[in-house]
Length: 347
Image 1 (cartoon, rainbow, N blue to C red):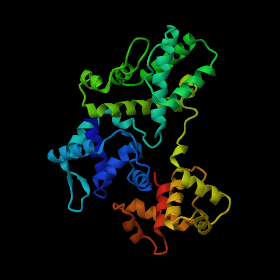
Image 2 (cartoon, one colour):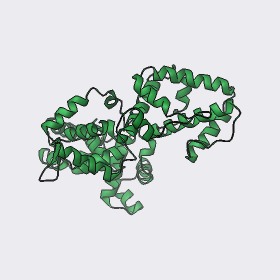
Image 3 (cartoon, helix red, strand yellow):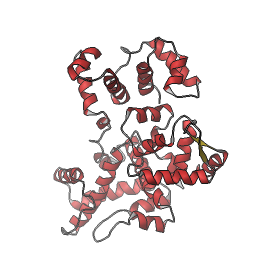
Image 4 (cartoon, rainbow, N blue to C red):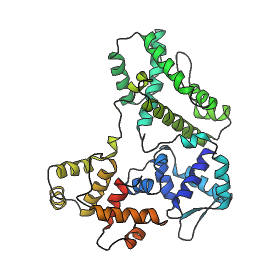
């Protein structure tokens, strides 16, 4: 099972230093500094946000199942730990190529927008070609539907020409996937008087656990995005579907406001006063900015010597708790500085 393998892989990477909740928040895509930092610190960025629809009850039940299989255990300190049986199960699943498709943090939210655009585009174009206008859109996201209208109005090509581009490039993309995954993707598409299979129908057809179906689709979408972005000239039509999408939406409005003031020359102390926020909150903002703003430099907060010292400790220790790192660096290095290094330097 793909979902079980993900829990085992995350558990293995966490080295008994986090609770099972850390895995849930990671897969769910919780927008918190702690979850972002865990993803970086434990090299789990590829799994960040790959299961946004995951319910806590479902997750807890699966953790309990893995405990019953003696694959994992919850320690006395409530940390999640992998057992030899879990390692064995994980090795069996290593051949599942879908595990290597995930690029969660890189394509966070872009994946869902891209997928919705593909679905609605194919449905609209195939119906327009048949001059059929009475159908229910497969996507009810207003943002996606507005994009669809704008996309069509900005193209002067005929519907037939647009469809030809869609299917030519889609065929090239899917031909690079395993046959089963390519078929699964096509089975989900809705066209003129043809309807995509539901997750339940797909689970039955491909004899897969229902809980794995959303993961397979996210994995496929991530692989398609990777192929497109690595060779935009080969897939010019599909590149149009994602060229306006970015991960800039990661930074919250509040952190953006802090960054705006900082860019205008305000000191941290002055920002605290202007915004009437706690110092810890402003520090959280800077950690968030360091995570996702490409031009932000942390040198003004952490000099090069301290940066290297923190990085050396991180690379040489198995204990990734902030307190453990703090105990091993110079006393004049703050938690804030350590968090900045993790956010900006640790991949």
